[in-house]
Each structure stands twice: as structure tokens, then as C-alpha cells.
Image (tube, rainbow, N blue to C red; front, side, top):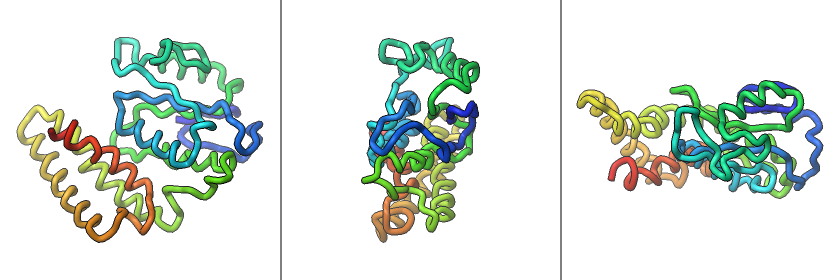
Length: 222
């Protein structure tokens, strides 16, 4: 979710207005990431690093444990920008003072079956890092192919590992694990012919897959 200084909260980012910063100048833009959503948080942080945005977009982490009040900020247990200890309180505060806060990116829990746009939001900050301008992982020429690959990989691999891992019935386990390994075979076939899933360059499809595959043996399967 995005909070911008014009008072809007949504899942798009508008940058066609003065942000009060010149190329290379840090903005008060912040990513809040939870280790409990390690795959989703990981891919966002990968793109943040690949695009050279560490000095533009700051990072806060939440504690891994979800208590009765929700996700709690890890470092000193308060969000450094607004001084609140919980993500829920931060969200409520952003609504209350919507017109008075700087640009804000909030990557939280996403609805099931929904393809996240958090990686693409990073392109909005290109002008602040001129040496990285044009580095995108969702190029116009490949968008339809990336969307197609994202869809079946999410359903059967990204989400499939959790469906299999948390299955409480044998039928539910089989419904998840068979499509999962079928997709892994399909991916292996694709990558035996190319270094990338789509086209001849790194795209968000590769990044989204990698954050699951790198955890597959030690976490999901081992």
C-alpha cells in the first residue's frame, strides 16, 4: 500500500508532482518489512538493492512474532518516522494525518491470488538515482509474458509450497504438491534453454521465483 503526501492511500504511486528532492537526495520514503513474510519482503528488498535505492528508501523491520496487537516494529519497538510500536497503529495514524506525511510505501499482507505490484513501484524513484535510470524488471515489451509466468508460478510454486506445507489432509497435500513438482519440472526445462524465465534479461518473474527456490530445500522441503 502507498501513502503519498497528497493524502491518498492506495496501491499505486503518483510521482508527477514535486517531491522536494533532487537526484541522489534521500527522501522520507520508507519500507516496512516483516521477516514472517520472508519471501515477499525479500523480493522487495532485492529490487531496492538492484536499483540502488538503499539511500532513497529506508528500511524498518518488524519482529517475527505476531502477538495479539499485530506486528511490532523490531528496532527499539517503534517506527522511527512516527514513533508508533505497531504496524496497525502506523496505518491508523497515516489515515488520521493523511495530508501531512511524506511519501510512504507500505508493503503488508496481500489478498490471496493477487499479484503484488510492490516491485514495479520501485521504478517511480528512477530519477533520484540517475546512474540506475532505466533499470526495470517489468519492461513494456515483456509485460504480458511476465504476467503469464507470474500467474502460474505463484499459484503452483510461490503459494504451492505453503499449501503443501500446511495441508492437514492427504488430499489437500496432493492437490498442492503434484502441481508444485510439475511446475518445477517445467521451470527446469525453461531454464535449461535460457538463463531467464522471460526474454534474455532479469525480470520480476525471476526474482519472484528465486525467493521461493532459494528456500525450497532448507525450509519448504528439507
